[in-house]
Image (cartoon, rainbow, N blue to C red; front, side, top):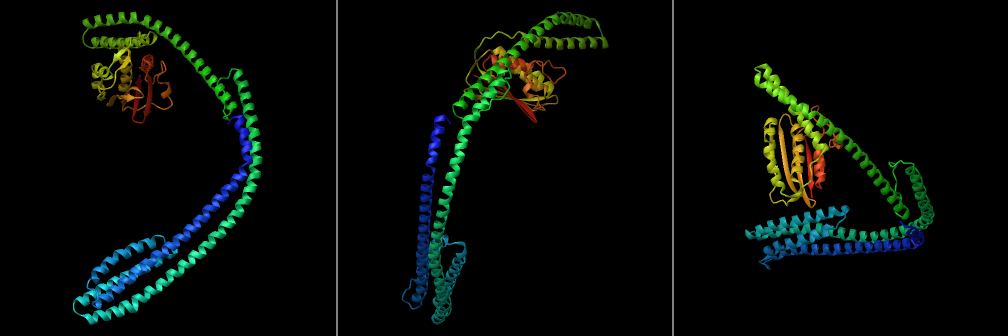
Length: 473
């Protein structure tokens, strides 16, 4: 919040009491309208019950008309009245409060009794037992059920009158009482708000300036890691944000300089070591090959072991040279699906040795990417090699490609043991490895080549596998 807005806030607080009084008036009006609506609902429910009572009385009249021969269609009219009664009963009972639900059940029971008596009367009359039907109607319908209906009618109307009047008076009393307490609360709140707001506004102006001044003094001593807390959104907060951004940029620049110096030193050392080892290794391999041709039995096996170890050391030397002298960058438009297909023969033998099942899902319809094919192939080979090393006892290697974030994302997933969370941030650093036979340069080379091609490399590892995502623009 800017200084200007804080001042406006202070003046606006003066209008808070008037606004609260207006809000209370609106709330009171709403309660009054609610009370009127409740009264209207009671009246509407009363009218619904009147229709229900009339429909049930009409059903009883239908029975008498049928018995006297005045209405030969009485049975059909009785059945039609059932749907009318269902409608008004549902409409009336839907709005009943909980303490009046028993009335609805009683009315429903009387309606069921009328229906049952009518069916028996109709059956007797149709069977030719006119006198018996008439006597049954008098005994069961006129003398038992209809008086019960009259009693329940009086009870319903009595409760409706009482609930309407009593409810209206109770709600009016509540409205008057709550309004009195609300006005008292508004008065107290206005006084408290004015005092608290004045204290907060004064504190919000002085505290950020003091904190920023202290932080600037600490950073001025060279401590770029000191956090810059932004505690306000006004001009002082914007100044603190800009200062924090500046220190973050300085910290990142310092880290990049340290990393660059470190990598330069490592690169020079790696090149020197690689060149110093390659020639003796070549001579040692040639001598071992010559000895292997003239040796037999166990001696030849010893020479073969020497050749194998020399080849392993030569691969490490190649890694060192690749890291110290990366290949020149020659970008071109390439198909990701084609690049992945061209790689498959390269590691096909390793798949067999590790007993790993390969799954590839790289649609040829993906748009081409502008990369150096040699660098991207080398990066993918390094990632795949690490995935295979993570599955010494077999597993599944999945290579997929899809469109993502206006580019193409390649996912390489293995079913190995995963990478511990405490070292996953370090696996792409040069010479970091958890395998005693590894050089720790594979993923470092892969990340360098991916970033040189304008992409990003991310690693996600969980129990049961690791996923490496390579995004290319």
